Image (tube, rainbow, N blue to C red; front, top):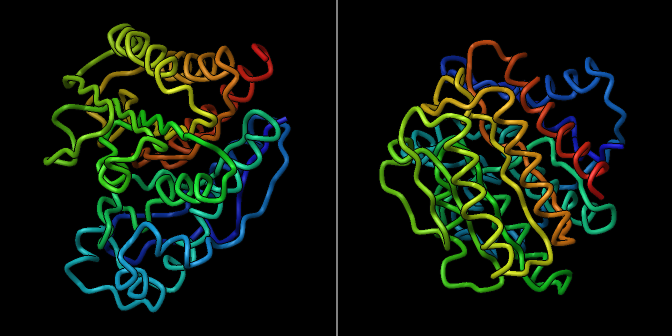
Length: 301
């Protein structure tokens, strides 16, 4: 049984002319149904403002909540912050926090949104408004729910915002494996960064993951993994520049879950990036990632 966090407020269309369509968050649920997935939906509430303020500049938070984000910040984000976007930006961190709480109880849960790893202290960036990974991790530690969170970010783009927002902390550890020449042009410093050349395929990708993640797990001994499971390393992704096949993405997700299982660490996944003109194909890849993680959790548990 897949435990998935979803809210109707996740599904918000982008403004005309932006090229950014939020409807993949609804299509992912359709893709799960299409595949006959057994799942239970858990509905999040918006993340309380105090927890967002604890990670982001309160002035920027107010701009998002009041839909008064300056034009230069909206350009950096990539779309206007409308009331629906503002609502989703509050729900998404609440969803990642809820997925983490569910994972601590069941071993694995997925947020059907989230992974906004480019959002920085006083601005959003790269289609990200608030950094749900950093916010949820901070809240889990601050509330005493966990001692240490490991953020495993396998989106094709570096998790620069997450790295910057958690820099210097030993209770939130960041690992990013990403395309070396892909966005952002100026990388932050994660606790562990693995940069891959354009065109990296299944074998080289999985070898790099196997060389780094198990040792990091042993060194950190986290209480929880937040897994940014972006599917944009896929060979057909419009913004990816890597060359993973469907089988490669599946092997990636199974390996991450197997590491969590072998170390008895609960794992919560977030959606992350995936880009292309065939939005249903993107949704199916996201849905497959969740299904593979749930299957491996059951199989190896």
